[in-house]
Image 1 (cartoon, helix red, strand yellow):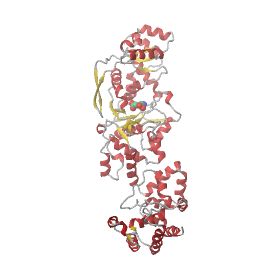
Image 2 (tube, protein in one colour):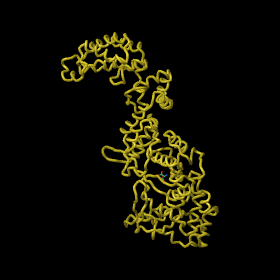
Image 3 (cartoon, protein in one colour):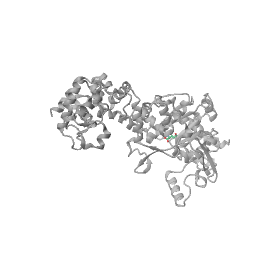
Image 4 (cartoon, helix red, strand yellow):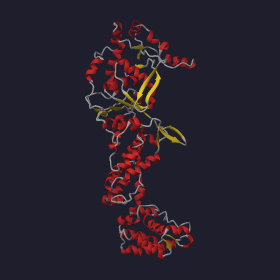
Length: 558
Ligand code: GLU
């Protein structure tokens, strides 16, 4: 180490007395079982959790948990401009809402757990400076005095002459100052940042190993990037190398937009003497927009924010299970074979991740969600709906709370002990439109605008409707059972001139008044004012025979 370099390092970082070696001791290699992976989710506290962030953190958590490793939440708050108040609280809350729990790192605005912290980058200034100071001592970092205007001019000149942009080689003016010159400038009060001194050449190639994509070849780094900004905080690149080394991360799962920077990161790790972290660059979540793929945009697509799914009332498990179908295409097969298993039992395989883009498909998510909800029993569903409604739909909350046992019975229709389970509900917001008719006051309000009888394209009249209803009332009074209901209704229908065999009806519709579907449809609308509902017998059963009868009689009075 040259004495002058040491002098420069002490001038820039007089307060730093520790060395990289000291840090190595302070943050020793983890004592974890063979194969255990240490991953981290490293968002900026912008108060906005993007669906891509949930996707990444889910992978992080699963890879760590399934290998008995550690999953860290690290906050990358070195860009003070992007920060929002309570950003961390919001983030932690949203992650928790989706069952993403970290073993280590930040757990709240001012709280963290683990031995490898601090886990907020703004609190790690000292650690970055230890590493930067050492690079300066070794002649591998230097102060750069270029102003923003000078750098703008440099970029323009490079663009004009079609050269690779950046601060490198002969363009890196400040790397050529002698150490004495640099010291003199600092002593004269010139402002500076600290830059890395790369010894690379973009004429040479390097290979970056990626678990998802295999080996990626790219030009070696030769950029003298800024490592410590004028505010004393590190850039992403430097913090990545320092943090992932000293937090003993084994796999950095991060977005594919970082692939081009990987050569630089390799350069930094090597120069710092750190063992290279393994990479898994995940695909960007895209959306199909009228046939062309584009990134999910924060501004245009509400579904880019995970808060959207919470507000709309998608169960957290639905969003997670949908993301798992994007992560590993065999998830659905696994789910079919393991109907009651928790998604945490599925093994996420990083090397099976589709690298060629992840398409976010709301229709598919809706289907997955219907499946997820169909696996819940009425008690589980009621609990989830109540928790959601309490925050997002107060009138639903009050409605259900009027009689919780009744609410549970309603949600149990075609669910509890059912042979065929209903799959018409994708989110809690769908519930009210599907159950309102179980409540007299809402049903009454709904029929104020008239009944939705399907009169089979004019084939049936309101007199026909009333004829069906008045005959059915007689049957209803006898107290039918689930077993004989349909048989009795069919007999009644036949007696009134309706065909009970749909095939025969379709072959010769003019020969009959209508079909059995018309008859059950009339009963359904009289009770619910909807043409599609779960089993109408079950609905009447929960509603109660007297209420059902009153609704039937009401039709006769119009
Ligand atoms: N804060 C960086 C980002 O949000 C983290 C990237 C990484 O995981 O290394 O893109």
